[in-house]
Length: 575
Image (cartoon, rainbow, N blue to C red):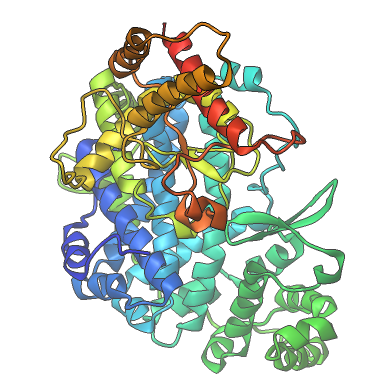
């Protein structure tokens, strides 16, 4: 995969990341910050997947932007808790995309931190801000362990109820998306907590004090292990959350650890078996009883997968036999200062002091955001869609996403629109049905990609006519359609002499009609990574989608007549 960003662009983008206020969420300046973080996140994951030079990590390390990213995290969390419940029912459908992006920004920052915190140097550069990140992760894990955030329900199989989807209100759809994003963020915090405990020796002194004394993270991790929010039961069996998607687990693999489950075990191991952490932790009778509940999970299969848990099993056996002293250890007076959280939730008063925002402040802020940032006209909506097309288009995320599905029926898709190269279909039939809705979006995406990657001029110097979308599968899709119509008329004259001959003037009229009419739905393209050998051999000819379900395989003549008939049907729909 080609790089989305270069080394110099990553350095420039990292330097441009700045903190923002809660009231700025949804503004143009905030959208620019989101685009910067999103592009760095995509490139960082591409580098990690392809095992290339991780220049995004180096750029953020040199710019010392880890505290700024933590500020993004806490500011978005404050907006989601204090402002979003006050305005989401009033947001119109046109502005719901921007509200979704505001919610999704939290997941984007968490996803980027999963790549960054793997490196010790990044964790060390965070300073006292790592204490606030630990506090943030604790709140998310507490929501998982108490089941305030539950795994999303599996989607029902079968035909999609399009009428119900059309009648669904904008705020109902937004609320479903908010719950899914919240679950994704909470699962990312499991990985972040593991990295915090793994690099706890190089973190400031306030971080282990915060994790063990103030927050008592082990007492949250044990109920989290028992709740197991990374798996769910369906009618077909057990599913586990792996790589941000639900996968069915075979019966023979049900005892195999998932990555998230292993992260929780490693976090518990790091906190209990590290000598420095153990010296800080006060083992009371309550904590002893809670920790001993882990012994029932430590079987041979688990220890084969994580051999270091054998040492922890011995420690738990010793702990169960230990007599806890009556006098607890003295309390430590190291209390971290929450500077970022103070800036987010407080406002400077007339006397210059920082006062906590009241409900009146939050209501006024929500009202202003609804009037200014979340009320969009047609022009601003088009600009936003073009920005998103440039950000997520061009195949930047193709290696990070799962197999595509048909945009019409939801079945596995192997073909996509040859104009925008973003919408996937299982066949020509579904593409024609979805063309009315996809036409406007297709034009926006195509225009955005042309600005981002200007097309090369042809050798003959021909320019593309306005309003005629280019068919990527063939150099001139409309000309091929004209030629096929002319060829089919000639074939009829040779095969059946008794029929009335088609005059040259009628052929010219058909050709002129095709050239002057608005463009029909472009042909479906088979991408290079999914093409069969037959498609590569027949690259010069436009690909005709094969039969659907149990239809007999068409012959070569049937394919030629079928594609010509499709072009004639498109002309009839236009007329």
